[in-house]
Structures are given as structure tokens and as C-alpha cells.
Length: 420
Image (cartoon, rainbow, N blue to C red):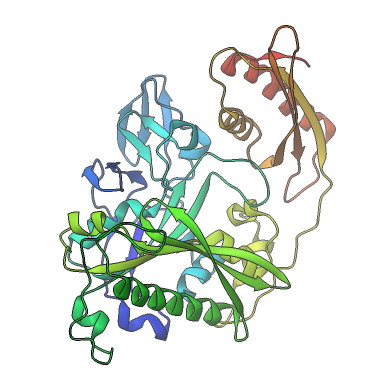
């Protein structure tokens, strides 16, 4: 579900309005620029964490009490459906809840989870910016669970939690504190450059960018403490221009913590706020929590082991916490090689298959080698699969059964030719 709320930190209070807003993880259809053409999900109450979702038969998928017909686009697995509605960011004393209280938009099938051609699981919370601006809000935070097909390692998981922030300014709000700023304007008919959009004045962009970076620097300093080193890296995001990544120097290493930028005016205009300019940012709660609490493996956020969760129970949310690792159980490593089918092959299809069969016993999957046969031109992939249970020692027999199931399913489901 998606939550929109007022930020609790003092330095952001003046920017945020309270909003009661709740959406399911089902994403709206989106035009270029992220503007919804129609919404296939409706407002709802918070989904209980024990709500189940499943694919009960071969031609339908059930999610949040509704049935969706499967078609050639359906690729969401039961493992992913079981995560919908868990709402870890709302579970009190969970590290993601603590981060929230402190305070890409791709549509490709290969990168996202589709129930069918018309319904997909939300890949980013940016999809809701238009709705919230259209409702009349000019400053808000949105927090929700998002779903993406991705690589398998200790920092990536197909379900994670994102926070979006948006702040819009009228001409008066932006320039009122500027000496002799009465004649300054938000908009002009110009050209798009690396530093601004074609419709924005340079004066407006500079002030919006300054406010954005000031607010986010204060936010990170509030979380990580005084003396924090921050740097900004120019980048590209589809909903903002210019766009930046924020990096912080934490424990001697530069780490990216969020993306942000000046909102694309086309999106703002279409939502009915054509007389305003604004900024937006988005950050992953897991990424922030892993850095702040020194959590080494993203799978731990889904652990029900009380040894994990009890470490985050304290008298107040500002208590300094350093995660104490659970017993480090030994990994078991197996490799798998196969010839790719002549049809289109996606590595994310293989990663999803491995996750579906091995679940959270899979710590990491690495493409070790890619070989093209000089005569047949067939391509072979060799992957290394690292198995490790976060709470106990795995046996060789357990891993062998899982690995054999992965080999058989890869041949059957993906059409590969095994080299086992």
C-alpha cells in the first residue's frame, strides 16, 4: 500500500501538508512522462499483513480480493504475490518503520511484474505524483512497497520500499525572499539545456535546486549526524530535469542514497498546477536502513527471527542502533551452465525462476561466464548460485534437491539446453 503523510522532522514541517491517501501496489497505466491515462486501482484501507495473494488456477491471478485473467504478459510469481500487503514499513519497530518515522520508471516486461497486459505491480511510487498534485497538494511524502525484477545479491530484492517527496512553489513563494525579486518569473519560452527545461527561467531553476539540496542535506544530517560529507552527481531520471544523485560519505565510503531533481513541467501542468514549479526526490528505505544500522543482507528485512526484530525495539526512534549479525552460517555453492534458446532470453527470467524455487535460501546469483560457440554461434551461460540460510545451516542434500529442481525448471520453463 501507499502512504502519504506529513514528515516528522522539524526542518520539513513547513513544506508538508497532511494527506490521508492509500493505494494498493497495483500500478496505473502511464503515458510518457508518468502521466496516468486511467487508474485500474482504487483507494483502499491498509491491507492486513497476513493477507494472501495467489494464482489458484492456470488462467487467473488473485490479488487483494480481485481476480485478474492471465495472458501472454503474465509473469508475476506466487513468491512475489505473497509479499504484497506485508507492509514492512508500517510494522512498528521494524528497521524500515524506524527509517520512515525519521525521515524508474521502466515499463519493460523484462524489468517489471505483470499480472497481465493491463495490470502490473507498482515499480516506483512516482506513479502517484500526478494523482496527489491533481488533488491539490503542493507538498507531500508518499511511502509504499514497489516491485522490480532484478539481480540477486545482498543489496537487491524484488520487493522493496520507496519514499517520494514533492514540493511545489508559486512565483510568490519562490521569489518573495529575494531582494528586488518582484520582476522575476518562473517561466519563459527558451531552449532545453543540460541545466534547465525549455519553459523554466534560470533564476527559478537555481532557487528550486538550492532549496532541494538544502532540504535533503538537512534530512541526511538529521539521520546520520552533524559533520556529514555530501556530494551531488548529475544524472538522468525520466520525471525530473536537471536530475541529481545524492551521495554521502559514511564510514569512509561514498554511497548513493537518493535521486532527485526539478520536476518535468509537463507532468506538473497536466496535473493542474501549471502556475507552479517544483522538485521531487525518491529514496529506498532498505538502502538507507542498511547503511544506518549496518545491516549486511537485504533478505534480513523479511526475517521473522526475533533475534533480528528485537534489536530495533527501544525507548525512542532516535536511539542509536548498530545491528549485531546473527550467527553467520556457511554458504553452499553450485554452478549451472546451459545453452540459451534461439528465442529471446532474459536473465531476469532465470533470476525469477531461481527465486521462485530457492526462495530466500538464495543469497546471490552471478553470471560467471558467457561463451559463444565459434561454429554453431550458440551462446552458453554459466551462473554461480550461492545458497545460505540466514537462520540455520543448510545441508548438502537440501541444496542438491533445490539445485536439481532449478536445472529441470530452466529446461522446461525457459527452453534452455542443459550442460549439467
